[in-house]
Amino acid sequence: MITRQQIDRLLQFRTQNFLVTSCYLNLDRTKIAPSALRIRVKDLLQTAQHELAGKAGTHLQRESLHEDFRRIEEFVQPEIATNHHKGLAVFACAGEKFWQTYRLPRVVRNILIADPDPYVRPLSAVLAEYRRFCVVLTDRMHGKIFEVYMGTILERTEVLHQVPRRVREGGFRGRDERSIERRHENAVQQHFQNLAADAFALFQREKFDALVLGGHADVLTLFKQHLHPYVKGRWAGDFHCEAGKITVPEVLTHALEVEDQFEWQHERKLAAELVQKARAGDRAVAGVGATLHALAHGEAQSLLVEDDLEMPGYVCRHCHVASLQPGDCALCHHPVEPCPDVVDEAISLAMIKGCQIEHVRGPTALRDAGRIGALLRYRSNATMQAE
Image 1 (tube, rainbow, N blue to C red):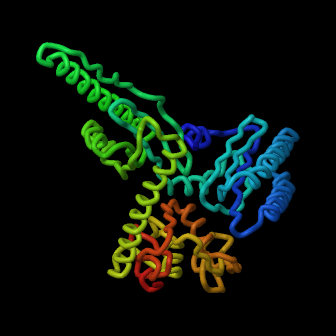
Image 2 (tube, rainbow, N blue to C red; image 1 turned 90 degrees about the vertical axis):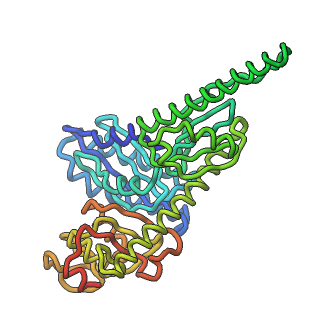
Image 3 (cartoon, one colour; image 1 turned 60 degrees about the horizontal axis):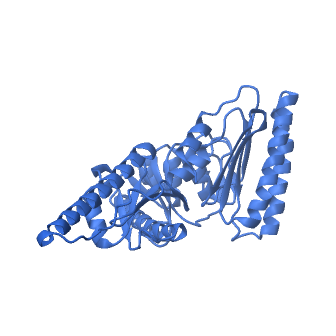
């Protein structure tokens, strides 16, 4: 699982004497066979190694880069055969003994860069789209906490706060039994409080985005009363299970089902808001032309785009502005060049501009409004004319 500590270490990593190799690879097997993908990756690495070798000023830098590329190729080739993620990001600096890999659930562009600092913008854009889920399982005797992120699961606790079973004893008019029952119920309530406190402690450390609960409905109703308001406010859904018997893979399956429904509702709501605002002439645009214009002029705050949307067009290699028409760039007046996909270029420009990026799956209100759009910081007359 990608942890915040790992990301923090990457963002803080700097080197004075070497270069950092940042490698992003598209490993989507739906459009290319694994055998062809292995050849493509090998050619990409070899070509980039020759091009980037000139950036290394010293023998030690060249040796470090050479080792980076060797290790990346050694790591990637088995990944193509054994894993099913769509993208991969690798950051390496052999001279500083630095190595980090990220398996990504979304397609990324093939990028290979060697610089003093890691190139993290594409990774940040992917991570920004995924929410970190806390999953709490509970019954009246046991509790466990998991973290689910980008399709992977990590157990955050062992079996927690085991509550002793009731032991019935005879006594005068059942008073002993009632006393045992009260002690047991108090222990159950304390168990719920401890588990809720652990969930809040995890939130304080990791700042998870959403909460999923697993167990019997009546137990979860009681447990929710003990949740801190910050945690309860992030509730995304429940699933039914035997908390003391369910396996970790089963937890992940249930949690991903809740996450999928939660994300689908979020995407539908966001797309409907964008289309409504665009039609009302408010701070939003829909359609390829208007969206590219808003991105180029720095008006876009959030970019929404349907999965698998592709469209040929043109791009200015000088300022990265994409267009549907040939000619000169509207911003810097350099000649534009043909490109296979202006949507990909739009996403890259959105990353450069610091926009939030949301990929939308399936049919939403965006489907009939051009399949792409942007929520705006402000709306200029030029953008209105571009619609």
